[in-house]
Length: 157
Image (cartoon, rainbow, N blue to C red; front, top):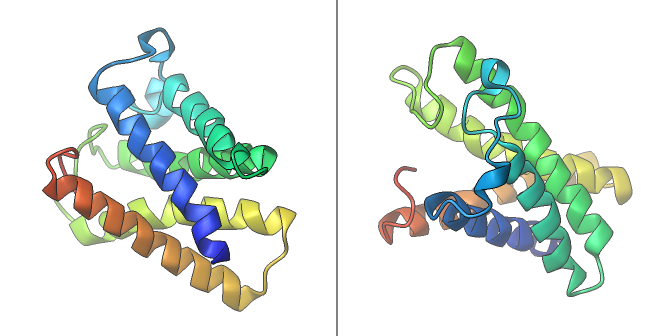
């Protein structure tokens, strides 16, 4: 049950963020954090949106600070993956030609790990729970991504 408390709000938040991007809401914040390091798609809009909306969602059950902290973990842990992809010449928003499944796994692992590690900093977990929660987080992420892809809300898995 704890893992659902951690991941359902962040998945709802990042799903809402997809609509923000699709309809270009809050475009005044669509400023890349660093074009050179992370590319065009890692923007201040996404960074702030995920932290604030996750805080608001978790605030409905009394955990606004935790929500903000987990949102921060989510967005921070996505940055190294974006950095690595830019160095490998993969376009922002693009997919790798080589290592397609590796990058698909990393795209789920990075954010799940960030959320779990930040949760662990506030509420220590055993090493086994950390691994289990990361794996479950990846599965939850993949389930939502797949559903959104098949509903044609999301362009790719």
